[in-house]
Image 1 (tube, rainbow, N blue to C red):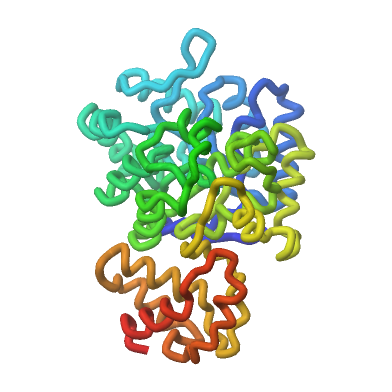
Image 2 (cartoon, helix red, strand yellow):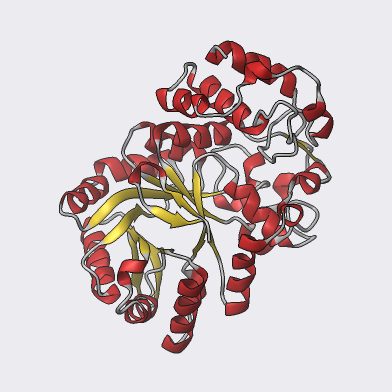
Length: 381
């Protein structure tokens, strides 16, 4: 298992994590088996959005004696009422729900306290003014949560939270189809096949800006919906053709700021399939050819950080240089962290001899030589 640092939190998380839906409607023995498989496979981060009391209790029991091996991303504002899940901003319910969660998980703290599911600006304002953010800060000050996060499907809301410097972690829906649609779309629109009927060109700029802003400000991203709820693995999904598990995982893991994909797994076999990514070949992970062939969708001219531009005869990491260039363009300046990362590259953009070998291999017709020239001018080498 490969591990990545989750933004400025300093937490080292497995790049393949576990979503909690797989624990739902299972007896303790099956939950225990999944936790055993997670530990054996090196998974150390698990999301806990569901307020289902049995899930919380079973997981708390399964974590006995090994709680310290796992990073818990637990949610505020998600409660169990009348036998079903409910999102709430009512502070009495928020406090009671989180207290119940800690008790059932048999722990006195969680590593990430995730403010649950904000997809509209009005809801985000309610979080800021209605007591939820104050409660999260209170918990953090007390050490009950170590880092504050937000879960959202909206790039617009997520950008507002990130730029306000109020969250350390963002749980966001990342996959190559969702990335095409405007950042203010809700989850229903993102998953609707009808949204992809008209020709689509390149990533939505607001979603790209979100990833780059998270990278620049040190907000780590944990990914949900990497498979689009399974739709992307089917010919009937929004892509119009089936992608593979490895391709979906690799796409998400090559976006700026992404540290872990919280893969849905309802069985041991499904979990093993996601874990197989760790030993997949570059060819099995490669999403570029598949995305370039998708009907009605084009990423022409847009760098997908897929690495097809390598190898450069001068040894330049063309994809990394392009990523740093894009981060600076998004900011309108050179952030110090980007300057340091660029300086650490073994070979700089100024070494480009404009041979065009990278452009010939790029499935997306990215003007790589032009980008190298721009980066050399920007960074001075």
